[in-house]
Image 1 (cartoon, helix red, strand yellow):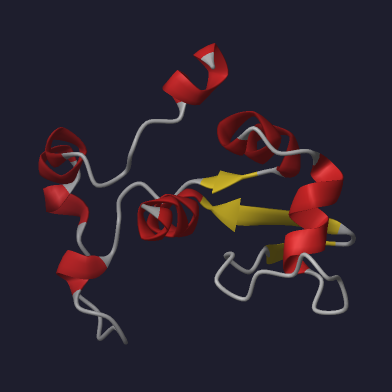
Image 2 (cartoon, rainbow, N blue to C red):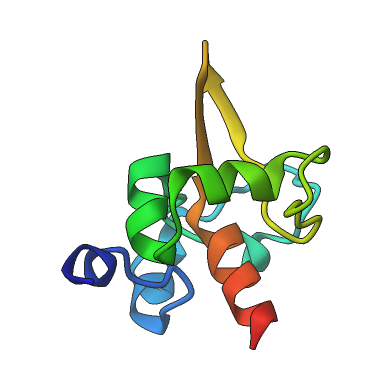
Length: 99
């Protein structure tokens, strides 16, 4: 659980205030106020610690052919090669949707 404490919520007011000056000026598909800063990508080993689930359970949740498939579980991002990661903001949103 100590490792999970290090992965703090992105939507924290202090973090939003700290990164307020770095908002994009370019045209975006989402309003700038909806973009969490900083964007954090977490890998499977951190996700296992954060959620308290095994690697195989997480992979079952993202596999449509698995009987444990969860269509609400965040889709991983392809980082290159066989590497994948998840946006921490998406994981937090999924956790909030469970309660």
